[in-house]
View (cartoon, rainbow, N blue to C red):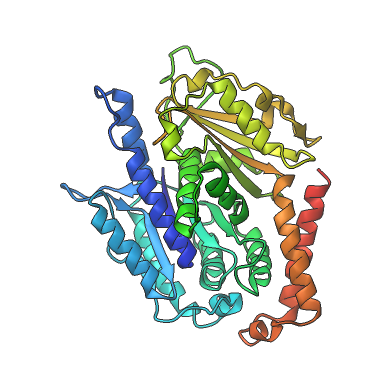
Amino acid sequence: MSVVALQLGQCGNQLGSTWFDALIHDVRPAPGPPRNDDACYREAALERYFHSPAGSGLPEARAVLVDMERKVVARSVAMAARSGEWRYADGAAVCRTSGSANNWAYGFAGPGEHCLSEAMESVRAQVERCDRLSGFLAMMSVAGGTGSGLGTRLCIRLRDAYPKAGLLNHLTWPYSTGEVIVQNYNAVLTLAHLHGCSDALLVQQNDRTHRVCAQLLRRPAVSFSHLNAVVAAQLAGALLPARVRRGPPAGGPTAGAYLHDQLGELLQALVPHPELKLLSLHAVPQLPESSRDFTRYDWKGLLSELHRETQSPAPPPTSLARLLVLRGPDAHSAPLGELAAGGSLCRWVPPEAALTVWSERRAPTGYGKSATLLANDTAVISPVEHAVSKAWRMFVSRAYVHQYTHHGVSEEDFLDSFTLLEQVIASYRQL
């Protein structure tokens, strides 16, 4: 089943093009003699995320690009075409001539409204190219105006138009030190409105990704392109084809078919309660390119490293559900060690339902093995609570509120958003 990506705003479009590059690089034929399971893996990945035109045309990303400014969208389309490996479909880009001025209300209810009909028509065209639609992956920032405001409005329209399709929102969370003066307003409004229409909200913190680039990958000067490369690789580890692991299968590492509706299975495994749908993403290893050829991991060491990462900082988070994806030789039989114990589990979740494991014998690009963990736990509450607290202090003093009310977002809309997110935070605190 196919997934249509929505690249929303500047951040979403930059990340989206990097993501599709990572996908197409991963499905290149593996070195050595051809294997039947390599061909099956490539076919499954391409069918899920790309449309293959008749003849010898380049694979076309199942994506819709939306931005109020043309520059970033045009650059993404041109870079894909220059790659010589894939491209965006004609008519997939929807843009205008001016941005949303980092104002969520302007993107949600202002002139951005005029983009919605065109964007929905582009989505319809992509959906009609799918033999069967699994759902949508929406990539967006919560800090700006177009990606957060217009992106939120588009996601609400998608839920109405495709009520049975899965919707996973990938939310780029801004630096805590600040990128935009009103970023906390934008984050609160985005998260509160998406909470009602999205099936899951994957929060990817720039602070955490920056630490990976600076400390683990040893980038001397971290840029947004470095952040996007890390995030794209982590997403690929979670969403590329995999098989359900139920102990060592009798047929060996290739036993069992690839998950048919992987996005749907992911949402079912990670969101057992409709109010608790905030996810975080962890991946190992993270090594600089200069060290990869000289570093070898066994599964025990790799999973111990992943466990340590997910348990810090103290106290360890309380877990509602987790999904572990292992990629590499013998992934189907890797000992789970401390990860299988579950750590601090929510009291009403059965231990056997708290961890879902998928595996794939094909090694990820650049590494011999990898482990990716998607978690629904209390760790993600800290950045959300921080944003709500700072936004509330600004709101009490009415700082910049007039910029939002001018475009139709009332003070009651703010209060409703604060109330909803405070309830979500309280629900996670009670786990």
